[in-house]
Image 1 (cartoon, rainbow, N blue to C red):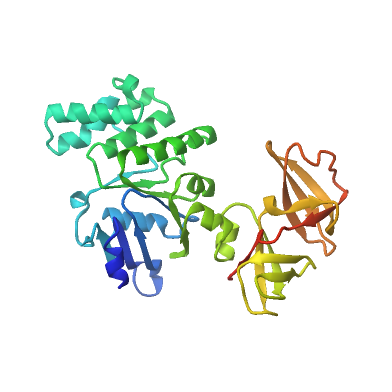
Image 2 (tube, rainbow, N blue to C red; image 1 turned 135 degrees about the vertical axis):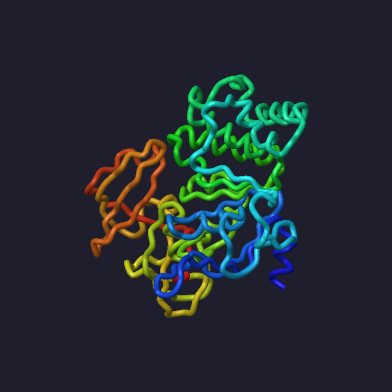
Length: 356
């Protein structure tokens, strides 16, 4: 039943296992991963180094073979299909542009190898240069371009043959912060304009949240959670996801009543999202921006204040000497100083009960 459902997707991954090596030295990179990626979706595989995300991408591309399970592309099994026969192109972290070719020649290279006519190549290259805003750079060579411009050339070259799936393996990691932020918007816009399914690999949480229709958070060869950016950030399913996606405070709590009522080990009463058995011990994730400084509430002392531009990060020390992080918008609570006693409140539903 699962396989039938996955076959209706642009990409279906059904119980895929990947093992490198044999015997005692064998390493399992993927442990029965299943997920479906819709047509025209910007889908992100997110996780730390070594979690299996790039291995999964390479399996979709055909650069790695599965040890078990099935891979579908628009309903067809493709495990035995060589890379050059898959309607898939890849943009790598290192763009691998031809230094002796112009932008125009780089973009048209794949089309030329496919035997397209000169007229078709000119038309398609022109279209790609317009989409990626490279028209004024047609005669330049890669060495005459900035990092962001080179990234757009690599993207245009991969899109030119009109693949059904575009795989992107950490393509923004070599760019500086400001350029990465700009390219996020451009990548999402290009994906929407072309209607091609993008599968994006990154370890950068902010990058994933900014661009993705859905995200698969991976760890140790398994998908920990699959959902929209908002679902994963607001309702993490376990401690790994909560801790990996953005900043959070994770505290131990005892469930005291129905509908998420609980008391933390620090003595702070909460009404959290989620549920569990009354009197059981769980962990709770509280995002720093959800904690409020108030005139009354749970008392603590400010340990340090870190200026972050639009916000200030306030680290508070609790009576048991443990610490919480609170995010305060600039322009509010202007007179806070280390050593001040402040009071915390957590609105109902602002915390999330976690599965360990």
